[in-house]
Length: 80
Image (cartoon, rainbow, N blue to C red; front, side, top):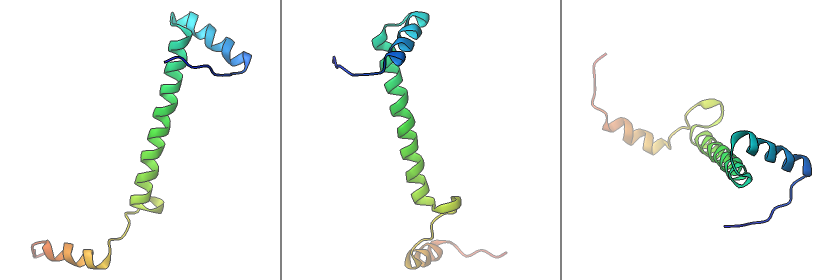
């Protein structure tokens, strides 16, 4: 798909220099840049979701008290 974007001249020139140096088209340079940007944000989304699950400071969130009792009751009794 073709698209038109506006970027500052210095950024365009830097991308053009990089494309020449790597033997890539400008389009490939911009595609790779957008792909890397998207991947970085996907990782941030995963981290945010894990933080929600495990709570602040990396501590696991507490189970609901009823679920905690059900879970404990499902474990076999062991002597220590």
